[in-house]
Structure formats: structure tokens, C-alpha cells
Image (cartoon, rainbow, N blue to C red; front, side, top):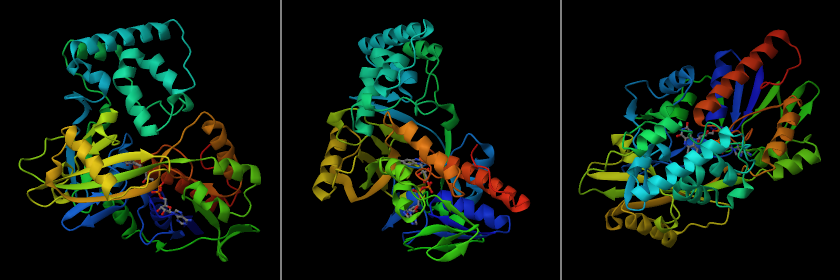
Length: 445
Ligand SMILES: Cc1cc2nc3c(=O)[nH]c(=O)nc-3n(C[C@H](O)[C@H](O)[C@H](O)COP(=O)(O)OP(=O)(O)OC[C@H]3O[C@@H](n4cnc5c(N)ncnc54)[C@H](O)[C@@H]3O)c2cc1C
């Protein structure tokens, strides 16, 4: 089959590689000059940085992890790291997840956290229903102490809104849920490990996270066209046309609001839903520093408090691979989310760095490189109407003959490994269409 894949991020390129492996003629159409999307990296002198914040290779799905590592040159091509993440809690370093690190707080805060957790635990045991909004979910799940000392300030920073407006639906599996035994152990000083599926991770030795996409494109057996502005996608009988060129099938991975205008047959109510699928944007500051002494062996840290500046997370990027920064230097990524209202400039960037200096993360005078990248589509704004809205959009696509997937192609809160798992599902779906010739059932039933 001849298949058009719209968008050349990891979703689009992984799918095209799988399709080519099955003998299909796959063409990836990418708007920008290079494949990669959110996985792109950039080189500045001898520094390499990821453009959309800190990315790591990990997966709960061994088949997908093996696939990712193979694209990055296997063991020799990657650096394996034992995760070491912390929260910068005022002047302390508290291990992450916060519930597992509670024993590192001052005594009064430990008591507030544990008392609140026990109260919330008892409430749930007594049948308190799971709240629909995220603010109340935090109190219901973790209690007042954990909420005030980390969860609420941190989440207000990253989501940039009143947390009552957000749905609690996205939380499962994302916000670590520690068993009560772990919290009690941690409170009396016995360290416990949370979020264990991510306790070891990998990173490409050379070229930043984009190496994953380059390794997917190279030898992939498909055609990648870059700099393509898609204007019209439509069905013609049993076939499809993309700007007049004929294909047997079209698979979309482009963020839906960026492609909806081109797909002629989307009905107006679905278009209206797509217009409401708003992203949270991310400015990623790329910071190179001269080092007087090696960086602490941290992977990344969370910054929950306003006095630490607008950054919510800092990645100790040169710790991921020694090739990310030149000798005698280190590098950081500082992530700042916004809702389209931030216009970063040099003065703003220097203020962010100054706040990181005050928080004890880096020495501003030692900064030798400061760049930034604004990513419009970074996180999903999961407000209270999101679930119903995206269900209608997916329903339409799944019965339209088009396939759509990807972080913003389907608005699933997916990391690259889950995008690849989805690509594998789509490839299997297309295998079935090709072998039976039957009209497709939805790929994601
Ligand atoms: C802060 C942050 C941290 C993350 N950390 C991790 C991590 O540690 N590990 C991990 O695995 N994942 C991580 N992710 C997730 C990962 O970046 C995404 O899951 C993945 O990159 C999504 O790939 P995609 O191809 O679905 O979408 P995208 O990368 O968004 O690709 C979509 C592509 O479509 C193109 N496009 C847009 N409009 C058009 C058009 N009109 N025509 C043609 N092409 C178009 C874009 O240029 C882009 O190349 C993180 C994401 C963020 C934001």
C-alpha cells in the first residue's frame, strides 16, 4: 500500500519504518526542515541540548525499550543511569517522589504530611468518592500536608491555572501513588524507592535525544519529505489525496489543531472541539556553565516554589552523557510552562538564571551559554471538558477511514515509548487491512 504519514516526529517516523518493513510504500510529510518534533536536539559550539526539555529513554514495555535502544546504537550507543531525582524544598534536597522522601523534611512538616495522609487514607477507606477535579483529588489522595508542601504549589506552576479547573482523570499512573507503608517508613528515616519503572534510564551517548529519531529515519526504508506545508487532505473514492497526490491511506500524527483545517471532511462540530484542544507550551532554557567542581550526580530536580523563579524542573543534562558538554563544563535544561502568553527574551532568561542561582542550583556568573526554545505543543490542557471533547474527536477519526495518533495527534499523554507502542499497533492494523482488504475497524478499539 502507498501510505502518507503526516508529521515527522517519533510517532510518524517510527510508523513509517515499521510500514516499510512490511513492504509498504510510506511517505512522511513533515512541515519543518528536519524530522524529530519534540525529540529534537540542537548543537551550540561543543554543547548539545534537547529542545523540548529533558528526555530520557525508558519504558515499561521491554519490546519497545529494545526497539528504542536499537535505534540509538544499543549499549555502546547509550549511557545507562540510575535515576537520582530530588525536589528543591526551600533549602533542602528531598528525594522524589515526595511521599518517599518525606523523612527529609523538618519534623513539623513530616507530622503535617503523615497526619494528612493518614486522614485522607481513612477517608478513602470510608468510601470518600474520587473527586473529578485535580485540586480536590490531591487532597483526597495525599492529604493536606503533602498538598501544601509540594503537590499544590508544584502543579500550580506547571499547569499555570487554578487546579480546580483541571480534571483528575489524567493522574492515574502519572502522579506516583506510594503505599502507606512506604510513607510511614520514610517518615521514620527508612528510605524507600518510588516510581520504580523509571529507576534506571538510558540516553544516547552522542547527539542528544534526537538520535532516537535519526536512528529511526536512517535505513528506515521510507521517504521523508521535509519543509512540506500540507494544504488539503481529502478522500477520493476508496483512496486519499494529499495536495493532489494519491495514497491508499493517510495516517496523521500532527497536532490536531495544526492539521484540522487541511482535512476537508471534518464536520464543523468536531472542528469546534479541536479548536478547544489547547496545549500548554514550554520554554526550555538551555544553559551551559563553566564548572569549578563536578555537578552533583543528579538526573533532574523539581522546583515547586514561586521564589525559585518560573522554572518547574531542571535537568542536569551533562550528567546524561559526557558528550553533552565540553570538558570542564556542565549543562542544564530549565523548563518553564506557559499558556501562550510568555514572550521569552534575553532579559527574562537572565532573570530565570538568577532565580536558579538564588535557589542554589547554579552560579550565574559561570554561565557561558544561554539559549531557549519555545515549544507551543508540550503538555495537554486537561480541563474538566477535555475527556468528553477528545472522545468525540477520536470517535470521528476512528470511523472516518483516517488513522490519527501521537502525543497531540490523538491527545494522549504519551512519552516517546508509548508513541512507538501506538505505531506498532497501527502497523498491525494496516497489516490486517492489507491482508483482508476489508474496511478497517478502528485501530485502537
Ligand atoms: C517536557 C517534556 C518532557 C518529555 N520527556 C520525555 C521523556 O523523558 N521520555 C520520552 O520518551 N518522552 C518524553 N516526552 C514526550 C515526547 O517528547 C513525545 O511523546 C514525543 O516526542 C511525541 O512525538 P509525536 O511524533 O507524537 O509528536 P511531535 O513530536 O509533536 O511531532 C509532530 C510533528 O508534526 C509536525 N507538524 C506540525 N504541523 C504540521 C503540518 N501542518 N504538516 C506536517 N507536519 C506538521 C511537527 O513539526 C512535528 O515534527 C516529553 C515531552 C515533553 C514536552
